[in-house]
Length: 447
Ligand code: MV4
Image (cartoon, protein in one colour):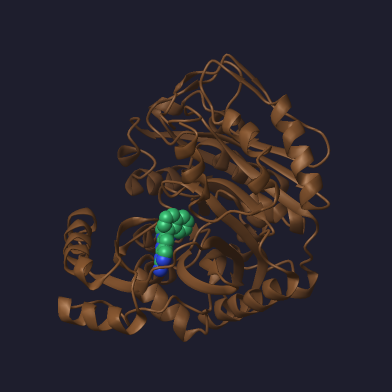
């Protein structure tokens, strides 16, 4: 087991990782920018190192400074959290070269999944169902037309270096194809320095369902069920659930089994998320994330397993603590992302939190890095906390969520709490009847 772990992140996820380290008896080091001297993660860690000025590029993304902080403090591993350097293959490689363990998969696995064409090719080879489309990159308009005619319109053109919704263009007929291809290619070149694009059948009303998987790096793979993350705005998830209201246990076991076997065959190490679009009872792979995700607590709630403990165990060579047959799904969980934003326009609302009171009681978890009197700096993303509620079934979970939202007080700034108080009373949400476009339509209607 590690003696000392450096946490290369901030906010609620830095605290989340800190808690797991403390439980395992591991010493903690955090790094922080000059804007974060008063942050909770700095207060709670055993040691802290200031690594630079407020902009992320000069602090939380500064590989040299983070490696130096490891050397100074004698940390033997780094947990990257999510965002920042968590999916940076070069960072994983540099740490390995310094004999510091990256708590995550190998640089090579990160690299494969960061290239969306390579990721899809790998998924297909491993037996994961993928969206029908081009076999690799599209070279010219002629090829695009041939592929699109083969799969049928509408189609979507995606940047191989994109992901998370960046660099996508829909073509509803052959007349749209030339412009869509050209626009997608030039935007991809400008944004990512890589203009490779590929084509897929465009699915009109899918759900976003993702499988939580883990590999031990030695040929074993397990799945922890799925999360439904269909409620999004501009590719930012807002509300996540486990299990998906759309799946039954047979479908879960089937796609879970496929994903676990794929992870085993890939020799993957650590936590991963396999993202699917789900429509008319079929799963279609789109991307794989090679990190712990923001919404991992809903999986923890229904399985009772600490996923950060598992990450640390696997990275330190101790293997997974569970076999597939030990992983049982118990009840239902929902996470609401509490952002320091206007609940209708989503304009960031940094400033001082004058009063912060969190809900409690059975089945209620709040992961947050803020406190009464804390001043939210304007430099980073606006997530200030997550409310995770668990119940024996979805109905109980929703009742408990309504109650927990009632108790939650955040004064001094705007937050997205009022949006959740609306959503929890909405009949479509109560019925689990929503797709990836539901939230944006709901927000547009309300104006
Ligand atoms: C799609 C799609 C429809 N058809 N691919 C957006 C983010 C990126 N991860 C993939 N995305 C999509 N890919 C095909 N073939 C629709 C989306 C999409 C979306 C996906 C998940 C959650 C929200 C979304 C919102 C708009 C579009």
